[in-house]
Length: 196
Ligand SMILES: [Fe+2]
Ligand SMILES: [Fe+2]
Image (cartoon, helix red, strand yellow):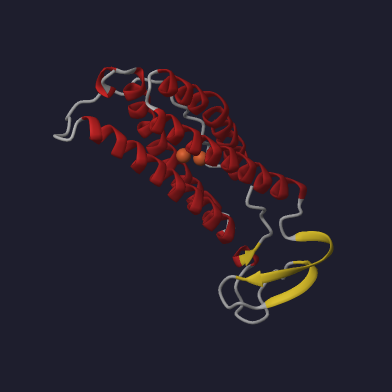
């Protein structure tokens, strides 16, 4: 089967559109975190945004292999979420739901369809992206959990806190409200965020 005639081709186009929106969603969410002066959370979200950009780039590359001359009007046809409110914990929650949907439902389905249609490499790509989206879900849920239960900058036992600006480190139950070395606010202290 020719890729251009396949369901997989449509799935690639919809995936590209979805990843572009995911990138935009996290770029907006980074601003929300920065506005709350949670700059290191903003950095973590910015890294997720970059991941989405590279997912989009990979899908774009696969689409262009089927139309190397380019195509001015490929149709995007799928439902996309519009759930951001500009409120950090609510947006973390809805983004985690979106990541869950992408990893467990959408990309899992696209992977199967690509395999059924004989596009093994594209199926593998959907599988690889699905795994990252699952990690994103875990990261977002973790940040949200720490924000809501108050453990982001406060622990029951002393832990090491490090200022991302000047490198000052200290062991304490609570991160310093203001860095004793450079005077930066707490939002520049790196919180402990497991990778996934
Ligand atoms: Fe992605
Ligand atoms: Fe993601």
